[in-house]
Image (cartoon, rainbow, N blue to C red; front, side, top):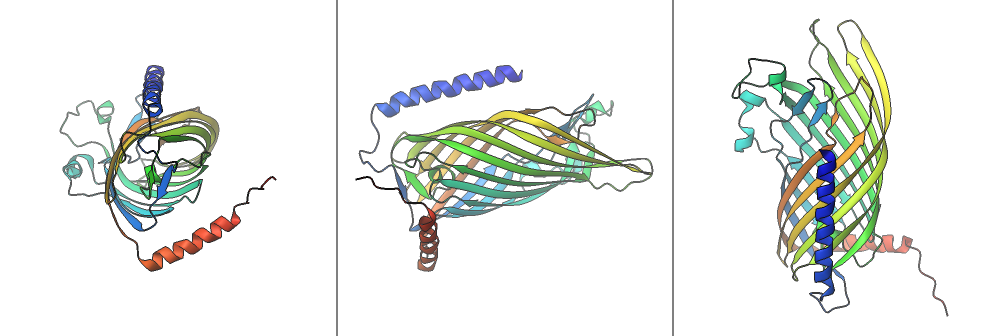
Length: 355
């Protein structure tokens, strides 16, 4: 099944690249030789809604499909030039979060920081989630029917720390126009993007031991290197279509602690990871307002032994919708960023001029 999905996705992406390449070659929207425009006078305030809450499966028969009450996360961000700070949270008043009696309560919050000066890009994120339910409860309770309470794990916590670093190889391409909305892409352009992603996962069931039950804690460290390609097509001066694909290979180390009433059992496993990420994003990037919709698909495979720890699902699709507004940046903020930018430029080796 995965092979069919992957082939279909690849064919779709290649078709889009071919169609849009023909469009781009027929004439750029802008006649200017300038490819991108930094918006140094403006702060971008951004509100996002996304369905990227972490859920995971335990392999086996019948196995376990553990999910948070709601996969919808909200985020508010402050973006300026090459830096961004955002906070993630759940709105419990939403209809999708109002069934705590059926699925239990989920709490999620997180922070994200992006630093992407020049052709370099990096981001750090931390997300914590507490409270899960067992989606396949009917595999464990034969009398369970739709509308009955699911098996709930209110003391199950997940924590995810992630660091990503990369470099844009084409200086005419603006990744900040797509991710931070602090720049504008003036001409269709693309770039190869080498990237390194380091992730620390922690899954801890803090359910108290009663003498008849057990609990587990799993920690995973994952390192994935990838080199992908991203391209932004200008459909008009203010509307972009961006497509990217990033195959990767890496390494995963898992430590599992099983707590029993009379003892603790520790196991360790390591495995290679292979897979890819892909994204399609449509943006409106006006002078004052901006908005966009992003669809993402990721598939990663890794082998583990019989004592497999809980892990983040390796095959998933997500979406994100955002809106934002630009406001004038204070002079003091501009001056401080000018100093930082000047320092960074002084660290870049100057190209030698040949006579």
